[in-house]
Image (cartoon, rainbow, N blue to C red; front, side, top):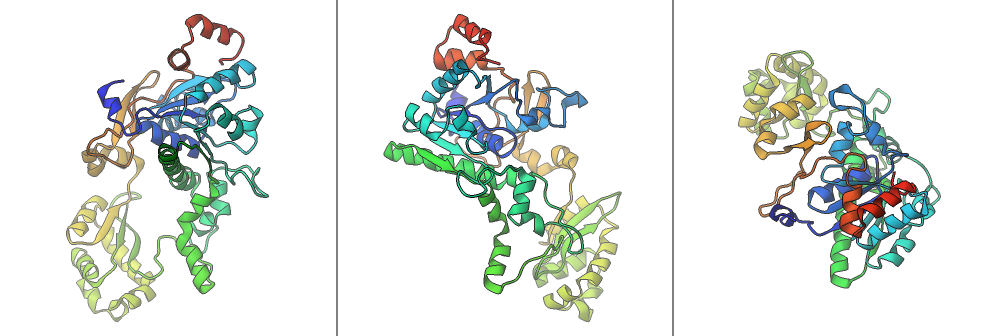
Length: 410
């Protein structure tokens, strides 16, 4: 192990990773980028569906060419097993015996069908940290329900809150459940369980129901109903008690800027930058409450002024005057033009075996004495099967060839 690898915070931790698709893969990506040896168990017969998900490098489809899969699986190693065979399951059990963490995000009962449920795994590795992160958890009347991020957003109330007041719920796709609350809560729970194991020698079964972290995103709406009996409706970009608070047009085609002024100083500085100081004497806008009540008229006037400015230039001018503002950026802007992300070195480029140089999200943290970035490109399907079986199980090339011949390795 190189010096840089030993400096990674989770160096020395081994994860046998049965997760797939979004939240599970993102959870183990966090661990892998922090330095854990994450061994992704895959099957060539039933692919992780992200391998078939757009966008593909150069528009050419292929199991090793999905940008979506690549970014969710950086720093991992891929081993392809046929868990329908006893010899394939035996390999999985042997890997688990050397693991610290076993992860899956299947519907309850799937891992048990392979003889790899928590009780069976604990018999192999008594101090294992085992995380099961299905949609509804391991128990309850809806435990076997299927779902994706869209479904989770719907049943938790998040979907209902997203969109414009007079339109149907817009939702967030898979974005928030799969990529924010669930993987971060899961990764934190794993770290807590590893800390508990270090203190007590005992492993843990982590039962994470993905609907529950998603509920954390609607805390204010839950509180409003608890305290006031009010069901919060969709508000678009508006704030319940602050104006201006919204997105306004800027110069160019489909260009926008987000602006919020929360106090009198920001309000007057906003007017000054936009050369709208006369509005400070307009009775409709002379107090926070008045501005909120007349926000439709206010937003029309502000939009007419902002439309004459570049969103980047106007955001900088407002920020220099202490006004909260930011350009509405596209993915291209974020990747190529965002000077803050560039300065912080957020984007990492790694040489993928099939796609060539590819870009990866770094972890959103920096540590003073440890490396916390993707350090290995996403694996080709089964790329590390022989390497891992040599290294972890001390199998010879002949023994691996025999496993492959009998269908244990796909």
